Image (cartoon, one colour):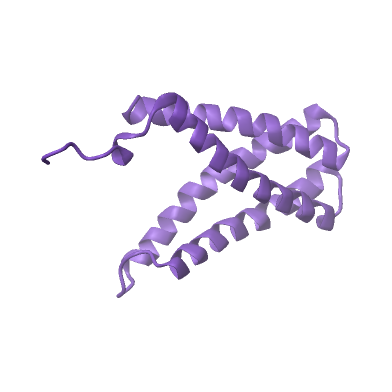
Length: 145
């Protein structure tokens, strides 16, 4: 499976599983019921998708103006910290308000989500590629090319 079909299947499966698992985690850790926690999980997912589009657009505009091109480890670390920092600033107050918990509890919840998503994304990508095969960009070049 390649192209847009692959991307749509990837995003759909990724988000359905992520929202389901996040809902469970948020409910267990905050004491909220599953319905209430699911709203927070869906909102967090939507915010993360929108933030990803906005942040990467802004980052790439900044990056294009830099004299030194490429993505060094330092630049990748800065990118990751900026992205996650933006989510923390947005999601912590949302979780505190919606789940009726303290800002500290919401911050700890968000840190838990960050760790979860690091592991989840890694495992999901391994499984997705195993089931659906590698994308064209990751397949070996044809011999003699």
